[in-house]
Amino acid sequence: MHSLAQTNTIIGMPLDVAPKHHRDAFARQAPVYPWPEKQKNGFKVKLVNTTNDQESISMLVNQRFSSRGYTNHELRKTMNVLSLQATIENCIVGTLSVQFDSQDGLPLDSLYQFELDSLRRKGAKLCQFTKLAVEKDVKSKSVLASLFHIAEIWAFRVRHYNYICIEVNPRHVAFYQRMLNFTILSDVRDNQEIQAPSVLLGIDLNYVATLVQQFGGKPELAEKERSFYPYFFSPQEEFSLAGRLRSMSEY
Image (cartoon, rainbow, N blue to C red; front, top):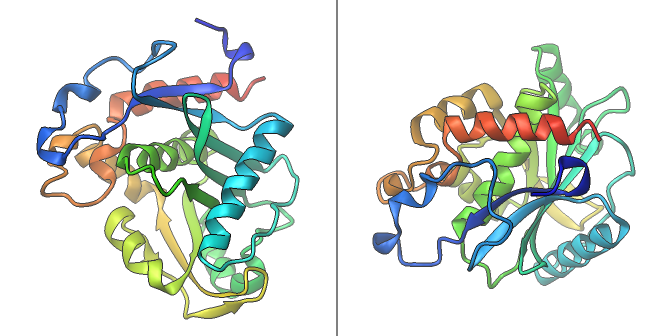
C-alpha cells in the first residue's frame, strides 16, 4: 500500500450495477481501511491535485453542462477549494468540488448574499458544493453518493463547516429534495454566468449526520428509503475516512 503522501486515492468501492433486488447487502461489510489497490468492476474516489486532473474534470464538467445548455465558469483558484474525482479504470467518470466560505465570501454571494448572510448570522459555517458532473453512462448510485459523502466528511469532520449550499436549475430541485433532503432557500433567479435559471438549496450537516446514523452503510434499505443515504458510508466507515482525510490534508 502506498503512503498517504504518495497517493491521492481516498477509497475504492464496488459499483452497484446489478438490479436493486440482486444487490448484495454484504458489499459494505468489508473494512474501509485499507482498501485493495484494485477492485474488479469498481471505482475510486480521489483528490484532484494535478494540472492534468484539473483539465480532465473541467472537460467532464463542460461536457455535461453543455449537454444541458449551460455555460460553465471556472472556480476561483484558491486554497479554499477541494475537488474530488471518481474514476473507473483510471478514466474520470464523476467530479464534485467544495468551496469553503472565507472573508472573500462564496461565488453564490453574487446572487444569494441576502440568504447566505442570514445563515451566517445564525452561526452557519458555509460551504458551497459545485461542479457536480457524472458521466451519463454511469448509473451507479454509489458513485454519486460517495462523492457527496466524502465531500461532506471533509467539510464537516475535517474542516468543521456545518452547512452546505448548492445552486441548481429549478427542474432539478425535486431530485435534491428527494435524494439528499435539501431544502429550498430562495426564489428562482436568473444566473447570467451559466445563462440559466437557478435556485439556492441548503442542508445542515448536523442533520446529515443523523441521516448517516440512520441509513448509512445499509443499501438493503434502498427499496424503502429512496434517497442516496443508504449508499452513504456507515458511521464506522465515516470515522475511518475522516481520519484518512485528516492525514491526507497534512500533505
